[in-house]
Length: 366
Image (cartoon, rainbow, N blue to C red; front, side, top):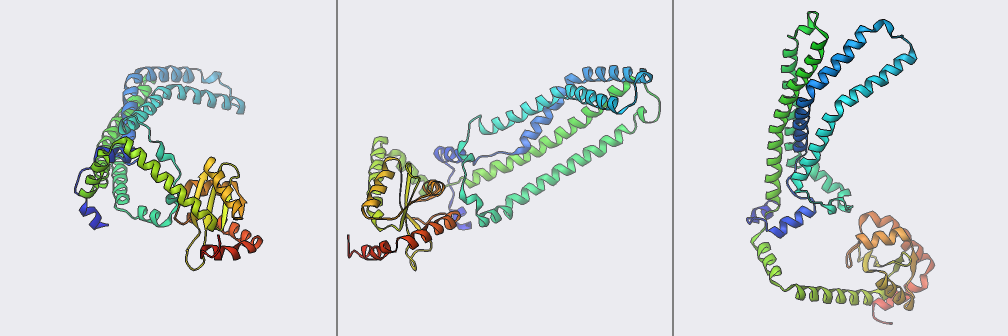
C-alpha cells in the first residue's frame, strides 16, 4: 500500500476528478454545514432579537399581571403547555429556518450544487467486514476523533465563559423589570451563539482542509495512469464506440458458447437469465458464465433448452445475479446460500443431465 502511494506522483486529471466526484469522493466536511447554520442562526437572531424580547416581555407582563385569573387544573395546565409550545415555536421558526437553509447551502457549496447519484447505489463491498474494520482503524478516524474532541473543548470553554458572565447579571440577585428578562435572554443567547459560531467555524476550516488534503492525496495518479488516460482520450469517439460494440459482441458470443456447459440457468423468468457453472475441486464458488436481459436473456434460455440445461425460476436471485455478478467471476459471497439451494435442487432432480455434462465439458459429446 505504501509503495503504491509513493508511486503516485502526478496530480489528478480532470477526468479522474469528475469520476471521483460522481462516486462521492471529494472534499467535504459536515462541520462546514454546522458552522453555516450557527452563523445563519446568529444573524437571524440578531435581527429578530428585539421583536422576540418585546413579545416575551408582553407575554410575561400579561401572565404575571393576571395570575389571579388563571385557574390551576389539569385541563388548564394542558392548555397552557400547548400555548407555550406554539409561542416558542413561532419565536424559533425564523431562526430554525435560517439555520436549515444555511446548512443546505453549505452542502451545495461543497458539491458545487451538483448531484452525485452513484453514492446512493448499493454496493456489496460495503458489507465486507474486512474493509469495514480497515475504515474503523484508519488514520482518518483518529483525525475525526481529534476534531470532535476539539469541538467539545471549544463548546465547553464557551459555556464556561458564558456562565461566568451571566451570573453577574442583576437578574440573579435583585428584582428587575419584566422587560429585562427578555433582554437578558436575547443578550445571553447572542453572546453564546456568536462565540460558538466562531469556534466551530475555525474547527470547520481545519476539518475541511484535512478533507481536501486527503481527497487530493487519494486522487493522485501514477505517470503510467496519466499516460494511459491521455492515450484513451486521443482515440476517436466513433472508434471507441465501435471497439465497445465489437467487445460486446465477442463477449456475447463467448457467453453463448459457455451456456451448454452450465450447471443451471437462473431466470426472472422473462427479463433476466444468468447461467452458472460449478466444478468441484476446481472452482471455489459458482462462476457466472453468461448473463443477459430481455432479448439476450431469451437467447440464453433458448440455447439452454436446446441442450437440456436445467432452468430454475427465482426472481430475486436472478435479479441479484444479473446486477452484481460478473461474467467469468465467482458470484458475490452474499448469494452463496441462495445459489447453493438452487444447485442442490438441480443436482437432485436432473442427475441424468450431469452425467452428460461431464462428457460435454471434456468435448466427448456435443
